[in-house]
Image (cartoon, rainbow, N blue to C red; front, side, top):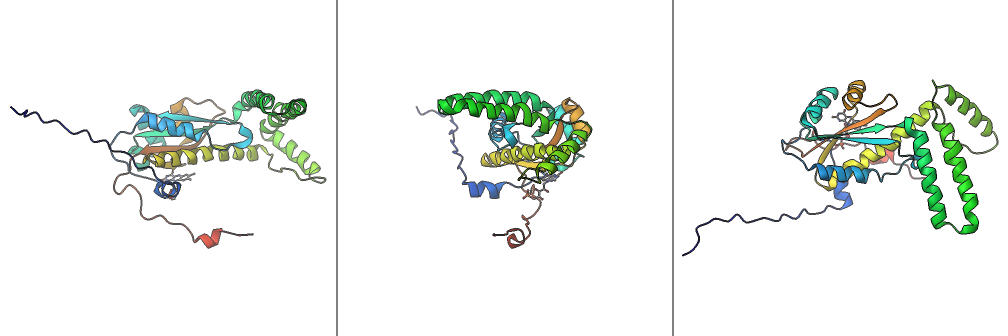
Length: 257
Ligand SMILES: Cc1cc2nc3c(=O)[nH]c(=O)nc-3n(C[C@H](O)[C@H](O)[C@H](O)COP(=O)(O)O)c2cc1C
């Protein structure tokens, strides 16, 4: 007697990996996501990949808030001015700068660089290299990253302008300049994250249209934290991307020297 039981066939759909070119082209800012959950472990992995982004002096003055809680997502959508990219998002990642952690990070980096020298440098060069790292993370970085009502930046500007009379030097040392550095670094992590998500065929939308006070309060962030970007996540709805991709002619922005 033959069995009448119907057994569903397990379909093993192997995700086809994209090339880098395909990933870059696949990534679009998506404003309307499908009402389909996405895997938070995959999103978390993409955030881990984002931490491999280049960052100034390896200070890693960033934090990533991976929001999956539906109540918090609703609040965040309001803080993101009710944009559809936020209201339809399945998850969100808030990219946060933490310039206020510069002393802690400089200490951590000094320890890591010292270990790195001990492991990889010839023994006769170790003392000198460790001294250089001590100078850099122990003195230069704390001096450069400190903030006090803009005054420390003015002082640093005067200093570099004087030194600049005799040798090449970085002039971007005002308190606002350093703040830009920290945000630049965080934005590189955000871009790495969005490409990592595209690699998983997950969609994103970077948003700077948000009420930063509300976002900070929802996430209970300390005074020194700043919101760099909110990135909504999900799977694109059929019309989730607004039209064709538009860029000014490449020749207008490309200069070969
Ligand atoms: C820093 C930054 C902030 C952005 N803020 C918003 C935003 O608040 N809302 C939005 O819908 N798109 C936002 N975008 C997405 C841009 O509009 C989008 O990247 C641009 O139109 C190019 O489209 P594409 O990303 O699909 O190539 C932002 C992008 C960046 C890089």
